[in-house]
Length: 113
Image 1 (tube, rainbow, N blue to C red):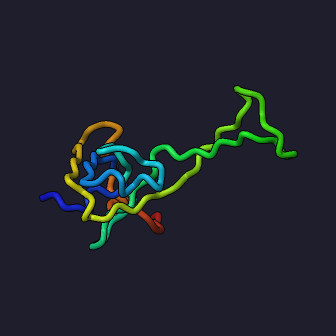
Image 2: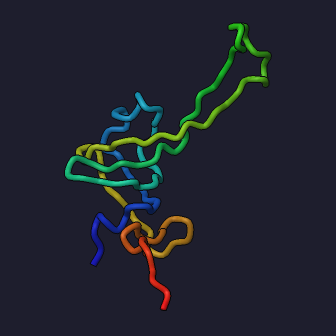
């Protein structure tokens, strides 16, 4: 049996009902692949796939020459409300998409005899 809990930590395909709901966070896609971080009754948390901050001015406030701009990747997470999810697709056992469950990891101490 497969449950939503099984997608945590995996990369899944999400199709959106209204892509404009994510425009304000830099997502302009009707669908895409996202790493799932968690979920609840309200929606699903995923990693933002491609958030960057571009620096176009130096410390003095002067414009940087073309090609000298700095592009910094920003780690961020996005909440997607269930009302905006058209469909989800999971890839069981597909390399690079299906990872071991966070709940199956051995965490704690072991005693050697």
